[in-house]
Length: 398
Image (cartoon, rainbow, N blue to C red; front, side):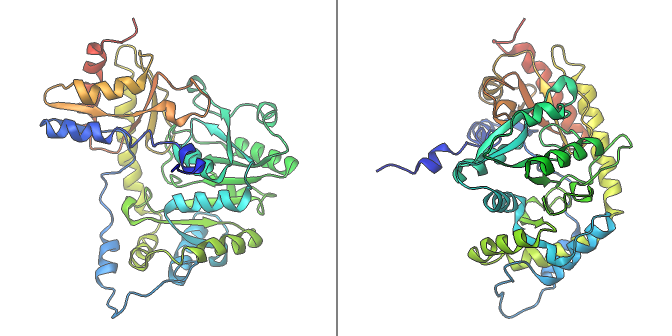
């Protein structure tokens, strides 16, 4: 018997595929420093667990398919405070941002259609598109240009009669790029001209540095009916395992259509929604201390990487990731080698090879993504392991 072409076409996670090697390294007694995945070590606010513990009911019943009304209201209040005009009826609660992405793709594209995505991009954009038989068409951005969007004409040259949407993360994963209002207005102009949807993944909205201000795609005038906002509590409140996300749009036909998908999967877990309500009540001031911590870590990694012979990165402006150019030809092999064959003072390092973040074959082969989600001592230790590993790596480029 054969498996479906759908599942065979699906991409393996470049972030998680090295887990077996990491587990083997731990069994050998090594400390594995995880800079491979966006799992923050910032403590989840106590309000989340306190709300769940206080939820005293005899039966944990199904929630509403669109989400608990109190959570929808809390999310809408959060958006209003952020200057984004979403009402509860514009929002659907999802099982993490991942389900919101899947639903957005299903709602806007048919099999054989295309979505433009600036690359490098979050790997699951490709992973979610492939099973739907939707083609991810890359808009290539470059590390030496800080992963800014290319000119309008270059983006428009990629559009065909099958193009249905532009999907992007802002701030960016894996790049840390933050799009300017001018870049977003350019995308809006393209969407209006070519009748496209704009799917904006804004889960890192709060994490913008160097005095930059974040502009939501939902605040750009004239494209309200084209914009779909994907969101999540995972990074915002350091609650990745809670799996609470959302999809928001002023397009009520789209919202009503996505609700059918929500009904098909019944509902999002009730207890996690109860906890998420309290998280959204924390207010915007909660993020200041968290952002300052990530900014501190960003500077450590940026300065540390650029002090390593042969390594280079541009300073990320948002999120908590950085793409690093290494003096190697195959960063995937280097990442495997570090876990399987290298250690320094009892530790080794787990990174995410960057080739899996690109759709264009051959790009990113010499790059890795680092996540600065660990405390200072662990980050500095990880950077030292990286430096020593590059010195010892047999296939290092001269």
